[in-house]
Each structure stands twice: as C-alpha cells, then as structure tokens.
Image (cartoon, rainbow, N blue to C red):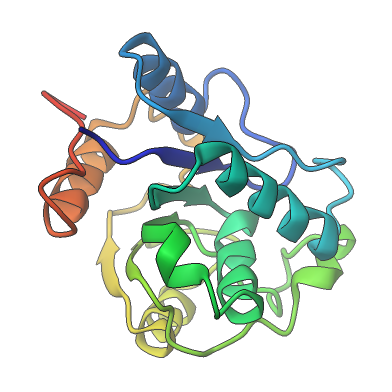
Length: 197
C-alpha cells in the first residue's frame, strides 16, 4: 500500500523535461495513484483558483492522505492552503515535499503571481521538508531557512542548483529522489517509492 501523490508544479507548469514530470511518468507507469494540479491558468496564476484546484486534486485522490510534491510557486500555495483549510489539512495531507520556495518580496518574483504574496507564517499541520538551492534567483538561502523555521519544517540545501527546474538540467534528479524517499520513510511505512524513488 502506498500513499497517493499530488504533483504541484510552479508557474507555467512543469514541462516534459522537468523532474516533476519525469517522476510523475514513472509513478504512473508503476500504477501508483498520482494526481497533478490542474488550475485554470498556469501563466496567470490566481491564488483562489489554485486553492480550488488543490481541493479538487485532493478530492480526486479520495480519503487516503496524500504526499504533496511541490515546486516553486506551489510551495507558497501549500502554505496558503494549509492556513485556509486548517480544519481538514492534516486529515488530507500526510506530508509536503517543497522544492525551491520563492520569495514573494524578492526582485525576481513574477508580478502576475502577486495574489500569492502575504504568505502565512503559521506552522504547517503536517510533516514538511523544504529543499533549497544555494544560488536560487527566486529565493535566497536565508529566506528558505526562515520559511522552514516559521513552518516548523526540516530544511536541506541541495547545492548550487539554480531554481531546481528544467533550466538546472537535473534530468530525473536522483538527489531529489533520495531526499523524497528519506522524507517519506519518516512519515509512515506505507509511504514508500520503491527502488530509487
């Protein structure tokens, strides 16, 4: 038995060469239960639309709590969702794997994602691991560590990997696979991803 997974790409969605898409394809080939966030607009993200899309993804999963695998803007989505759905968040989500958290007050943050600003700082009601990069143009190391502290999350700096996206040329990102496997091993014996993932 394996916990279902919700893939949460950032702005623009994750293309075919993005590690999220590669992992998703592998999980689907292994008949694992995977749902991908499907907001109305990837390029002009609205927080309310994305919150509803996450609700819909979790409804599609069913009653078993899911593991969220989020990148970039969707890391902020998870914080907003947890704050606004506090009554049910811990029942629906077993853990969150948040990669490349962007700083909404940073100079590189996209203006079209302004509705995601004012990020909640409350502790997240489920186990969380933040994975950051030492040279991420969208989120400095200090910001990522501050988010981890506020959200009561574990934090790993994975090296100089840029924004940990397609441009980082990570392929299926084995380091990330190992981090996710270790994270899930600490959640429950039911959350595992088999050999290598």
